[in-house]
Image 1 (cartoon, rainbow, N blue to C red):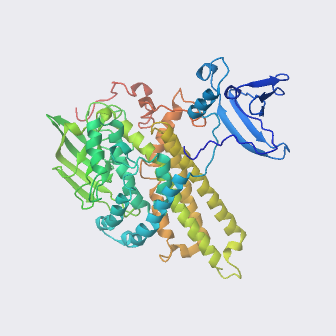
Image 2: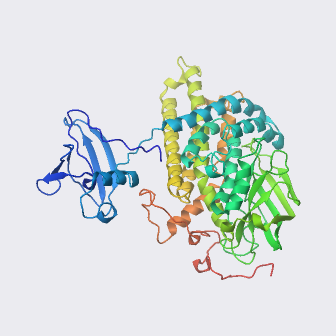
Image 3: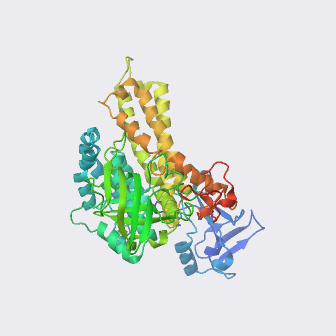
Length: 559
């Protein structure tokens, strides 16, 4: 995490420093009894340090000689001797390499780097200067297809600026932004319109699975095309959800029973093609003209005889494929984003478009994708809440409600807005933390990403409503933006892997696992997401013995 920057050991004049990690400071002589009174001095620097070890955690305090203030508190995990310098005394080169690798003294610093501030400034300028002027008209447009199309000009500008494909790997022409940097940029766009931001996000949802599970040829073919479009109109799409009722479904995609439970869209092998039949809903793949995006990753059932943890796969469907029709959905929120009902009627898709790493692992694709997007959905909520808070604060400083002073002077208003500000800050840092976790764990955050989305999207919805309460009935007037803020915020907890339908169940599956370490997130440990963590709660009174086994406790109606 580039926000966590190492601070150099630069003592100020006249201070004595207690310094850390004796293996990294050579030529030290130590005198006195054992801890906590033993004192050591480095022969070269004259720095004084006292070893302190508590359960392998080295806690280091920099202190002024006046003992008036602790200047810094820094922590680092200790490492067994044989992994650093063995039993011998470390040299200067050892210390340097150790700091390069383990980072013995990593500070928690939420200050953005100069590069991140540039990313933030660029995204903010685009959002305020290019996007904001078109959003009101697009949001009011009653036709959902036209509402989406009204953002096309801004999208092309975002593509040319490197925003639209910023999350894709640099080696295939993408921006190569870290998850953290992308989240920082996303907040600025979401503060203006999370619907447009969703269009950009879906480039990642549609194409990141190719980078995770595709072949080198597929990465060059699909991601390379996405990042080299001279028109700047290229769209990627994500197609997983299905219509409610009857057969098929989305939330219980990993249901352990065979079809008709779970995902209903089938992909049947026919020579060099897969033949797709069924329907999808809430797909982002409608395109600018209801004829489809350039490329969409589609979750399909390639084996109807097994459950969702074995029978699902992911395949890339290209624009112009015969047998596919699109119908735009009319929505209360995210009106500038594309969401469509898609019908596949004997649509033939080349076998070469199936992502090999996702064959039989479509469940993993869904979970990983929605974990990857969790902090972005969270920061979208932060962006909306930020805008609502700023609008409410401005209103309360300029309106008296019949009093002699602006209502910001009253305790209730000040207390509520103060709480809103605190919640926004804490939600932002959770999103940063979850993004950092993704960056450090190969873009896996099935637990942390879900926790982040659940916590932040629901908390920010409450913040926006609190802002409306202090403004009062005027917040319902269309002369103010609060109605749109509330509509947009209501979307975030229930889409992108709904908090109830998917995200909480993923958290439940992980923490219920017998081997789960409840301190893993705190320790920044990798949490391996296994198929055994899926299916939990998908069937009432479900017997775990059937989970991920070939056993079928009932005969499918199709048989």
